Image 1 (cartoon, rainbow, N blue to C red):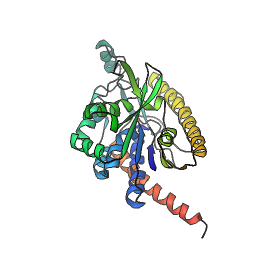
Image 2: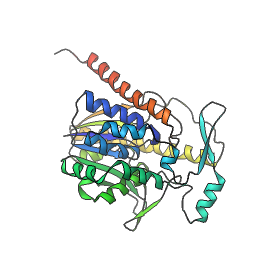
Image 3: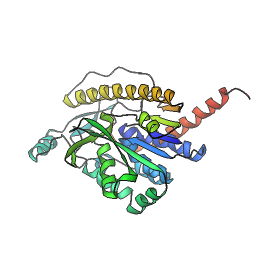
Image 4: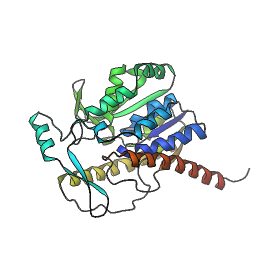
Length: 303
């Protein structure tokens, strides 16, 4: 049983799409299980359907307004010629006055997910025999939950994909089934162990971070940059722990893991969605997967 696991990573999901496209179209890998967290959950349904061009179009045309119904920050170019964010005081204040528990809201993202994944596609996927699973964090019960397309209705599945991507406190906190839910990455950034627990013997894992740290975080300039740095630190710890646990589980179950990291730092702020960058990242992911597999073939011993 072969599984494809895609980590969280916001706008960097475009890179994962490129890697997955190469694995599916060029290497002809056929996956029985697709498991995603956050941005990974946005990709996996259409990858499982073989509708790569459709999801590529979404990722290479998305922008801030596609995601946020109330965007709590503004972007600007800093002195290092990189994009940074600062608080949009009026939007945040208005959100709080409306009773929101978060700085911003991401209802536009749910609309985009519903528009992109139709009822007919959902039904086709349910009948395909492939399992598609998204990761969510149940904040009320302090648990990570995995929602399989086999167990839910269309409306619920759209909700779970959206919830898996909600990077609080910048995006929506969702109450469902009496519990508060948020981004799956808060509990399971790279759910390798879950794939193995579900029976996978070969797992291709796309991790939207570099394998080693190439830079030191810049000093915080405002409360938003401090929060993003703090979240980045926590996510990095969770990711490394998930990978270590996944490797341990693989050793105990004689499973094979193939890891695809980003070879370079794509961005220091994955909340910024720019069409031009994401188009480039998709192609870079495809090219990277191609080169990685060429390198692997070159070092294989002759039989």
